[in-house]
Image 1 (cartoon, rainbow, N blue to C red):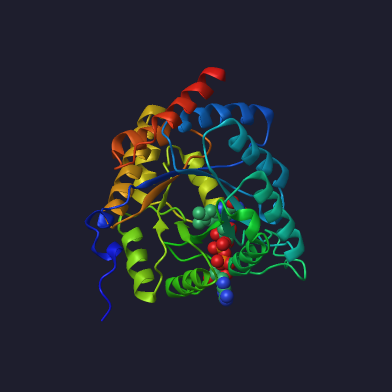
Image 2: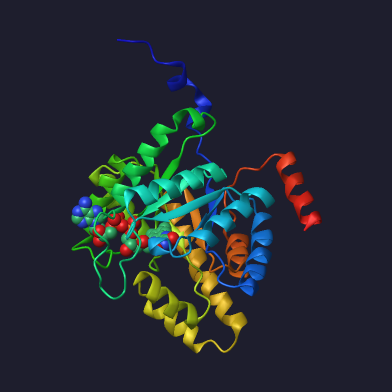
Amino acid sequence: MSPPSLIDTHPNLSDAAPVALSYELFPPRSPAAAESLWNTIRELETTEPDYVSVTYGASGSNRDTAVELINRLLMETTLRPLAHLTCVGNTPEELAEIIGELLDTGVRGILALRGDKPKDGAEPAPGSLRYAQDLIELIRRVEQRRSALLCAGKIAVGVAAYPTRHPESPSEAHDVEVLLAKQRSGADFAITQVFFHTEQYADLITRARRAGVTIPIVPGVMPLTSLRRVTRLGELSGVEPAPELLERLAAADSDAERLRIGVRATVDLANAALEAGAPGIHLYTFNEHQSALEVLDKLALPRHSRSASRRNAIARRQLAS
Ligand code: FAD
């Protein structure tokens, strides 16, 4: 029998890790939207998130604005971007070029997604990748080719996970099999689709762990503070919010009341997920900071405190902007 390693016997290494905090942003579609987004980015920066994710249109429809936003985040803020990348409709060659461009920009985290199929039901172009799993393998191949350039940080690859059945999937069990396949192909972590019932995150974790999924699964929560957002959410994800939440939002007679309802529901979801052992909280922001900041205020996350030099960097950037 070999003696226990120093690491196994070290008492402090079993302490719980700090809870990660992250936000989702999408690239702006107009100059006015860009101005409002940058106001939001400055507000969110003060909360010192571990990363901010930047969405990517299926088939690369907003490639330039996504790369531009990521570039500015890297150059002008203290934030670390997690670049979403979709593969539907793109060939491996096209995707390898985009991955290279992201790495050259300084990106070290990619959320590998399939993306939604075209709404007209057209089949993706021949030769384009079919599943997120293919994209993970491609990212790992590009990473391998560039390993000497990545000595100061390899790529963290994230994937999507589904607390409720993916609309095209035959069952929740199939979704977990797909998640396991994505882990085997090299995924490091997963972020969940939005969900609105407190037990759904814990149920996903139970099913995933039983199937052999070991990667961190971060719950994605969205403050629903208006019925307009509900419509947009349905278009984007096919997820139906809880009927009680919709009824309460519909009955509310002011924006302030709707904000209070949406924030309360999100705090309840996040607390339930944290009780189930969630390693972080990912907030879908809709490029607005008010509800995200209120959720954070009420959550009291056990967070690590950043170094004074990082806080000073944030303060300097705010003075300069
Ligand atoms: P996949 O994991 O490839 O799954 C797609 C479907 O194929 C599923 O039904 C799955 O069951 C099935 N499947 C997968 N592999 C196999 C296989 N080997 N055999 C048989 N069936 C299989 N969309 C965007 O366009 N841009 C974004 O920026 C974006 N960001 C997102 C962020 C998060 C956190 C989440 C949860 C979703 C995001 N989406 C985004 C939406 C996502 O693109 C859609 O949900 C899409 O329909 C599926 O993507 P996926 O990566 O889960 O695909």
